[in-house]
Image 1 (cartoon, rainbow, N blue to C red):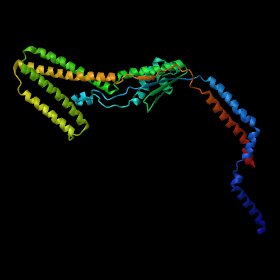
Image 2 (image 1 turned 135 degrees about the vertical axis):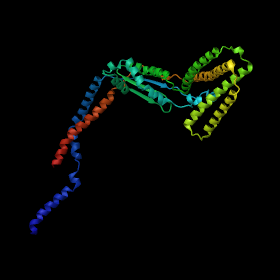
Image 3 (image 1 turned 90 degrees about the vertical axis):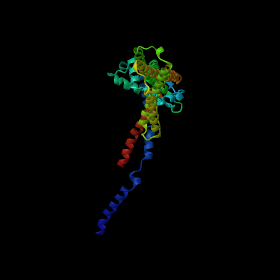
Image 4 (image 1 turned 180 degrees about the vertical axis):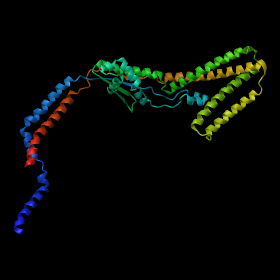
Length: 378
């Protein structure tokens, strides 16, 4: 019984030992592979070289791409010289967009890539036909793929690059980006001074209309200016100034209530100022004259109120214009776009290196596969 089962048990044990021996089952035939590669050394050298030559020939069939570059610096917003003067208008300064200095490089980098600028370039260079696209949106997407915008975080200089198969067109498109960006920013109030200028410009237009209406109402009373005595005139001017101060204080109180609660010290102080000004106006209103003189004084007070308000806004408008002209409202081009002399793509050396590597790998696999199959059979 033992003599018959012993050979079978020995064979089974030997088979299991061989199956669990990693050195025998998983050993990579390094020597056989190197020997095969050496035998086919002409293929290992000639194949990659042939692939490199083919890749070089293909690279000549690809149209060259040229890159137009332009570098510009957005206007830097500085602390306005009219900051102290704006204090006289209180809350009007906040509504006018007053603020400190800030870096607006990200803003201009986004504007130069905006749809408005892109559409202008699509129309200007007829990119729908140039890119052989059916719709304008497709030409815009292709333009975005051919355009790169980089913002220097340290120096704040924005670099814009445009790719095209024609070197002159690439330079012209880079220049056109700057021109269209300037046209866009001219219509937008981006800087703090521009925002204040636009605000006071609108306010001046409204006050001017009211001032004209007040003049007409004053003339309709039938009393000449010389008919008004010194004291009523002084009283009317005082009431007009007081009304202008009250208007400014009420606007300031409204702005503070939007940002703070009614229990805040600033809100309570502004409310007290409004109440005090209203009280002074009420006191002056108790001694109103009657008759034709009363109508004249009322019209004169309205006229003086609009006149004082117009003068205040005019001063702030002029200060904003001065700050806008000094604020660097124009883009400063650091590097003008020049016609590129060398192509950017395709890089023929990269083509050859990549083809050589891929060819070498393909030839190596071609040689090693039969060796590995033979090793597995054994």
